[in-house]
Length: 134
Image 1 (spheres, helix red, strand yellow):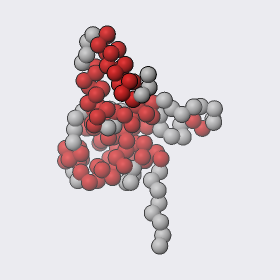
Image 2 (cartoon, one colour):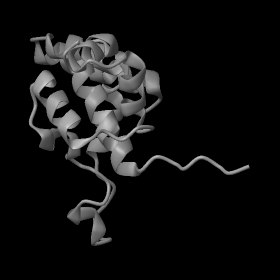
Image 3 (cartoon, helix red, strand yellow):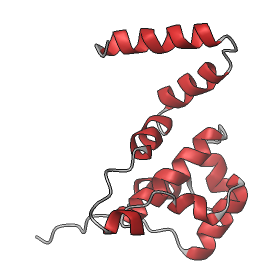
Image 4 (tube, one colour):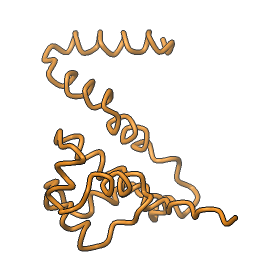
């Protein structure tokens, strides 16, 4: 039985950036799908990298999400900095993963509303202590 082809890392990255921006805007997969004239299941497939997003569709997504198309390719695997072999793992990948989760996005939104720098510092200290990273 033939095995399924694994998604291309670029398709996975672009999909994760679509998800990140959609979540930043508080938009559901259903709402994005409606705006594009497709189902939310198709949006799920794009976001997982299972299905590749065509150029015209990506342009339409960028317009709806109010970002330039280049946003979806920022820090993509195989960029010139990575290809040289001397670059370290992009530090922003864990940030994208964090902000792509509903917990990360909620935590980030709440954190930026804290105006007192001392309280912010205490929150960071609390999270580090909870993580065992004192």
